[in-house]
Structure formats: C-alpha cells, structure tokens
Image (cartoon, rainbow, N blue to C red; front, side):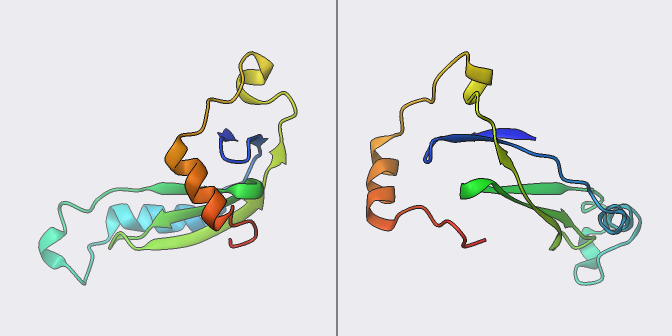
Length: 113
C-alpha cells in the first residue's frame, strides 16, 4: 500500500502480509450465520478487510467476523516514500483550516496505536 498523510505531511509505503488466520475468519464470515442476530443471517454474508493508517506510518488491519465484529489480524510499520505524493510529480494539498486548528490544539497522536 501507499498513502499520503497530509497532516504530517509525509508519504508512506509498505507491504503487510494478510495471515492465514485472517483468511479463515473471512471465509467463516461467508459460511456461518451470526448467532447474536439470527434474523440478519442472509444480510451479513460479506468478507471485509479494514486498514487503519495512522501518523508515523503505522498500519493496522482488521477483518470482520460473521457478526461484523472487527478482529485485529496484523500490525506493521510503513516506510517513508522520499519522492512524496504522486512520486514527486505533485505536492501535498493544503490542509483545511479546521484541521490545522485541531492539530495545533491536540497535536498528532504519534504512538497511540
């Protein structure tokens, strides 16, 4: 994956292997019915992967079980892409004023993940 963090500003790139245990949870989500909510059995037949991209290049990955509860399956650290956004062909977009004020007040939560 590759993404840019406008608030830092920084561009990150990395590779995280999805473990077999995550694939098993996803396959089960397609086969099993959610016992908590049996009335939704025909609706919840999906397999989902969610990526969380945090300041400092931290990546966390969750999959959803048959009841759509998130199950954390991986965590990793991406590297800085020195060329920046669009491999150096463009710069970072300007940050919105509301975002600037929030960061000035609360900072960037490095290490909170």
